[in-house]
Length: 143
Image (cartoon, rainbow, N blue to C red):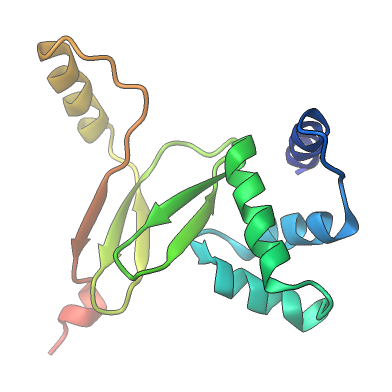
């Protein structure tokens, strides 16, 4: 986690911004919370321990995380932007339950291979991709 903090601090310095205690608290909470958090969810977690940190500060700090490459924004069809920690993470895709909103991460090398084959056939270089499959999880399919 030290490398992540350092990457964020370097980014702030490069942009002429300050590394503040509030930004450090938000980063720590984001890293501890797991992934696929909305701004509201992260804000509520932070507010429990640090009521002096406002919603706008959390919002702006999450935007800084995405700009510096330690987080990624996702739209999973629930109307909220969700944020996922990405530094050092292996690439993965998502299964999203449209009923309970559960998000399941998965990796499958066959999908990656097929994407590469399709790109080669079309003389296309893939720089990045996202795969999100929407449906019903096992719990939501139970009668």
